[in-house]
Image 1 (cartoon, one colour):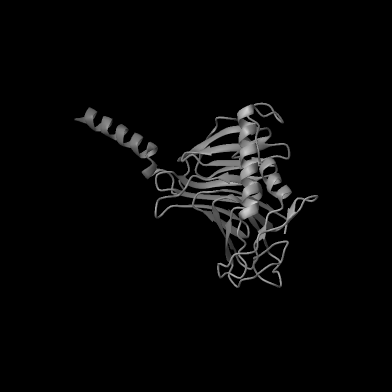
Image 2: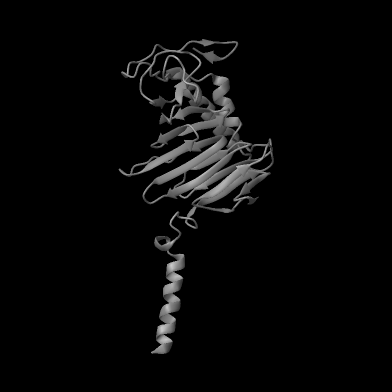
Length: 272
């Protein structure tokens, strides 16, 4: 009987320490994905990071000026961190489709698997904004108290936090709400300095849209060298961005009205 009890206690302790249901209250130790590729230097929880490192809930990824990281989440979503970036994977539960990320500074491109669970969400928080998606491809950056969000595909909801407001470079339209919806080919900038004319959405200058992709890309093998398949993907995405820029809708005064088709200056490649 004593032997049986000892074995039972050992088994119970093992189950308690390995089961996600009995993990730390903040979910630490629960697997979220892994680093699929990177350019040194980058760290995971202040330790040097390397490809194939496992990522858990509450892990903190940080890239230096020369570093970039691409991470694959367990649901198939992909995060591509640019240089000088700090991103925390607060939570990622593929089964319930609950994902929460925090970016203190830097830039990240997120290619998100479609959220189909009624209670599911994918959110990225910066110091002055929350970005929510249901399955899309978008870029977000936080620098100089400003959050910049570009939607490449799908739809993105951006909500300003606190006294922050949304602005853009065109000054078209306005709204009294602190939340705004972006469609493919649109962008917003959120700043802690309140603009005098409220919320706006702008069409993305092609150069800025492309820069959001290239500044977060990680080569498959050697830096600055892309194989044929990878290059093909960039070309395809570039085409998709161009199409999005041509047909994207501008949300102006919050009533869902369509904006006129943007015109582009061939020399500058900027849509207005």
